Length: 193
Image (cartoon, rainbow, N blue to C red; front, side, top):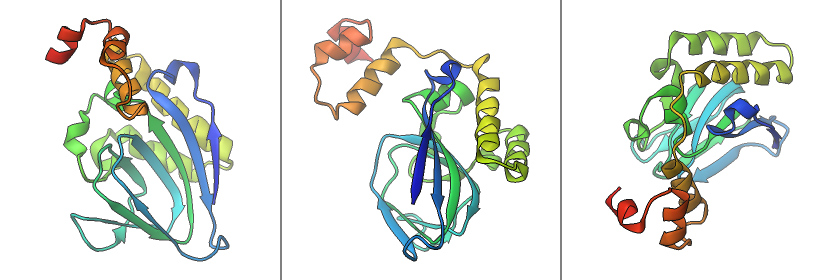
């Protein structure tokens, strides 16, 4: 499996951490099986060539993966199975998905959703353009332009968002006064939040 990372446009940097391209062909040692443990990361995935299937604790059977998937944070254990996958994954910063799309993450807790059902009609049009794009660079440009179109109406990241991102990245191993300092609050104000 090849994973390449692409630099994010500067205007997106407060919302998106990285854009990744995943390329796994059938030649890559047969069937792939992965168990994903709960995490705090949020992804938007564009699978433009895949036979992958997903099993969650909720479904308990393997079902076909969506071609465009919102993968929310704090998922319960999930299993992926398949042979081929070509996809573009957008990894959001803490609060970045909400900032761009104004959709709270708790609505997605413990399940993946087809982004075409949740996001605007423009999203379905974007996926069709990705399928018709000739090169990978063109596909990535289409994804970036889609996200950049939302920056003008986006909710700007607040100091508290940066503080929680730092807390999550350090696995909670950071003094509370450092978190309060990043959030531009006193310790007492932070405790009330």
